[in-house]
Image 1 (cartoon, rainbow, N blue to C red):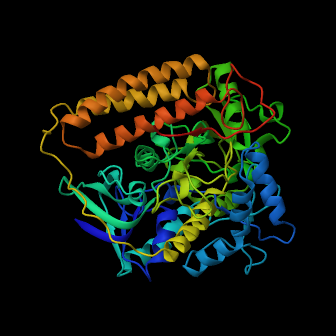
Image 2: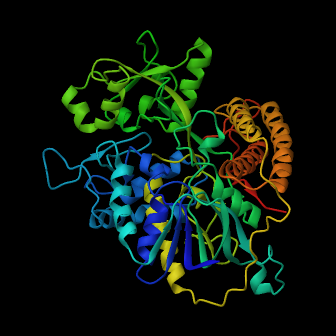
Length: 528
């Protein structure tokens, strides 16, 4: 058995920030499914929203967030995050993050604007902000003597007092560690900890088309649910309006900042369509733009629409969007001359494990941060570039809370029991089930939903769960089986949440309930 003061599951921005805030005082185990930089944070292009301009204000950023969230943002959480915007940017700069600076005023950070924002307030590192942040923080994490990095490890399940049969009231609802599969050795480890943090990101891979990396399988949400945590607002899956449409461009995002800098959405004949859908046109929030594109594609039988920023100079595009410019050029698209073919794709999970303002879950000593958590910030639709900000703010909050806690003795934890299982004989079943799940979730639980589609999806989920439970009970666990189990569990939470919302609000649009109800209520699911 391995033991740490704190185990953090996930190495995105939330996990790295938390590790660095705790490492001077605690022994940290940092678990990541692949390598340190394989999470969604590293893929983030746009930037981090923070009030820095003289013409901007905290209240304006809060108001923009509340409007995008369609009445469901928690005002306390929103104010808490927004008020920490400036200090977050300052802390990241202290860690060595190289943000882009203004051309005319070299001492000032360059601020761009994205959909839903009333001001320029997006701090960025060209169009690879996530990579710049992750690389700066990961260098410190790798070198820190108090941080043990467990790469190629996938968490299986949390170990709670209830799970191991403890009866004392103070122990039943407490987390003591987890089981994790070491993909190097194929062995399952028992890992004990005073505190466990879920920082595993979102669940984009539950959908056929996504901007997320392959690791985004809803692991933390599924594990937290199985352990007894409430989840909220899982129906609100944000579909990014502009994912590059090309057979050789897997999950490549075209950042919202392209529209913020003047990019126009057009039909194949060059006609703009966004002004017909919303007065804010290309700068409307993501849910509005994604639905508009979906509508135009279905109405006209299109495979994609086009994002045109060719009216900007080549030098401007190379400076502001070097990564997008280079990647598109590799695929034969010169964005200085050609419009970019784009389609919507699953991008961000706005719901998740319910937490308070200290990132605490319903289970003692268990925390959730980043996309895994439902803090109340995003409501029914996340405002662009609030997510990386949330990662840092709530990771710092969790660190403060953990450092205030007193350690207590850990009970002996049982080893993983493999005495009644054998090696799998038909791995192909897992890949077939994975494909089936992602296809019917895209078809039935996508941008536009109906009650009948949701019922069909739930029927198929139940059948898949039976197969997976049987497989899980009889065969040794593998990385693919663990991910599939978590994806199907997360899919069920999304569908159940969607079935409970009898209205259209934010990212959830139902043809059967097209109106918005007068009162905004969170969808909260409670485990049995």
